[in-house]
Image 1 (cartoon, helix red, strand yellow):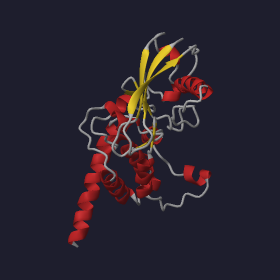
Image 2 (cartoon, one colour):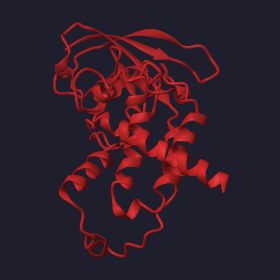
Image 3 (cartoon, helix red, strand yellow):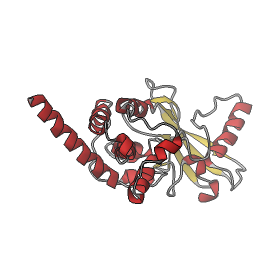
Image 4 (cartoon, helix red, strand yellow):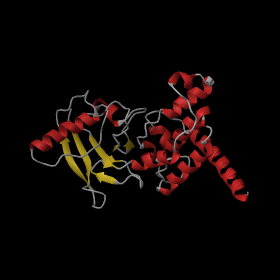
Length: 253
């Protein structure tokens, strides 16, 4: 299979970027999108040209590093997958493919298709640790948790922090990511002692880092590789409202 690529090239955050044309020749249909870029880069290196910089790690849909927008869609066409799980058979032979990095104010470009997503790390750090002593795994499992709650917590915990939700949102909102990280602890008994401080600190850190507000476009849910439901955002809003009221009451003495 042969493709025409329009690839965003940018030296760093402080320089202007532009789309440049490349050809991907003799690409196996079973190759993943990142493997296709590997093949293109091998050709560039052989011609002593600078290879296209892009991020990857596990290439198994777990790490969330492959932060690419393909044909205007975060992670590319299809549902419940990351870019490394996108295969070239998804495209038509001879098709023109547009490739660019995630676009969000809080994700500055490092180089070409690589963005700095450490803002997500700072949000998680703001949430802190849990103080509940759970001991070993058998001790933790001895606390009864209903199946409905356990299933919801596991669904929220499936978030891999890839950032596609923020990249797809017209407002660059990180609400789905934050909602998932808050909910998977807030649903469990071990996460209750810090529940109000956790949601308050994480939401305020998210706002301070420049992420936008949620206006219910649901683009985040559409591109999430873990198919995390936007209903977790409603849970986040309720928890934050409760935390804010408690904070206000405490301030009044």
